[in-house]
Amino acid sequence: MLVGCASAPSEKDHSGRYTIRQDRAPDGNFDASGLKDAQPRFEEPRRAGNKSPYTVWGKKYSVMDDNNGYVAEGMASWYGEKFHGHKTSNGEVFDMYQMTAAHKSLRIPSYARVTNLANGRSVIVRVNDRGPFHGDRMIDLSYAAAKRLGYQGQGVAQVKVAAITVSPDGAMFVANKPFGGAAGAQVLAAQKPTGYSVPKPEPKREPVAAKLSAPEHPDSSTVVAPAAQGVFVQLASFSSNVAAENLIRKVQNQVQTPMRVKVADTGSGRFHRVQAGPFNNEQSALQAQQLLQTYGFYETILLTDSR
Image: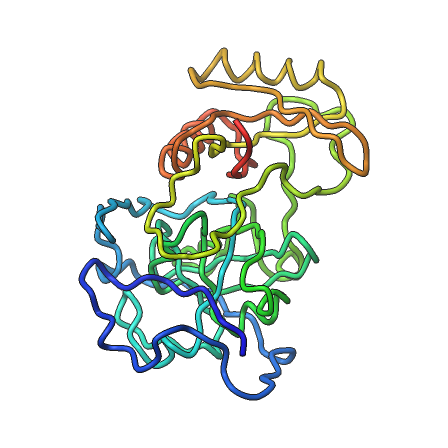
């Protein structure tokens, strides 16, 4: 039987509330192929589930002031039957057959497009829970969403998460770009930051170098990267080192933050990735990402990489 990677409960020990000791997939062969994406809509801000900061297993986390422009890469897990029918962090009832997710810092309820970087599949989920609080995992999807993305068997996958925001008039945005209609049928690929020219951009996304693997025993509450790893904000990727160094100088003329060029040899050639960091945790990287956005660098992503 398949075993998922569930979100943690709140700081108190609520293990007695669950009738199943270890999370698992539902019995039978659930067909998720016809399951539709969550439909983003405007929802009034709520207090439930958005307390900030909050503490889980002795570690403090913060909720973002808003989700505008949030784009990050990291590890996704899934949760299923153990939590099915129980309340989420904002008081809704978790349904493993619906397109939902848990995230540590996005405001809830909200929406996000999640893309499996291994196969290119994408789904839209409604974020209505907190977690995951295990190891290096960034987002927990419902079993149904994980099956749509094709990773329910292995339990975890490297994904890209882009928050979808909806204004009161119904206008939708992802990564600060208009979203919906024809544009909603595809993932909005990362584009160059405004104000500079990108010669020979990286032609296709390659797996991020030195990603963190899922822990063999997922019982740790920390999401801080190991000493040999760090969290980075990646601004762009070039085939030319000169172009990468020019961008670094441009950024450092405006923002005082550590920068580097990470050389990556891929199946499509050698690329020079412009990254800010390293940061010790996701929260620090998010703050740097938001600062970069104020200077016009909108299309950035968060990722875990070797220092």
